[in-house]
Length: 102
Image (tube, rainbow, N blue to C red; front, top):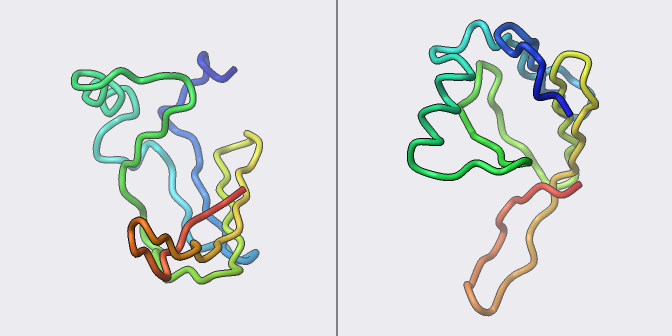
């Protein structure tokens, strides 16, 4: 859908409970988006919908159950998730793990 978009200088924003927490541009990244994709694809097959985590700009802080996180990339549709606490798993013994759901 967005394969022909030039991502060399798009804005990236993260809102937490309606408050802007992070704001930067892809042009400020140490490695360009094409360099990151090239590097990742050398060791694994990337498929449509895959996400590559690259780190984070200033503004990192704690998130809590009930928080709403909203990510914005230029004029693209926003991604909104509510933070929930995962249910305890008898198989893994997981307790109190924060996860995001849509």
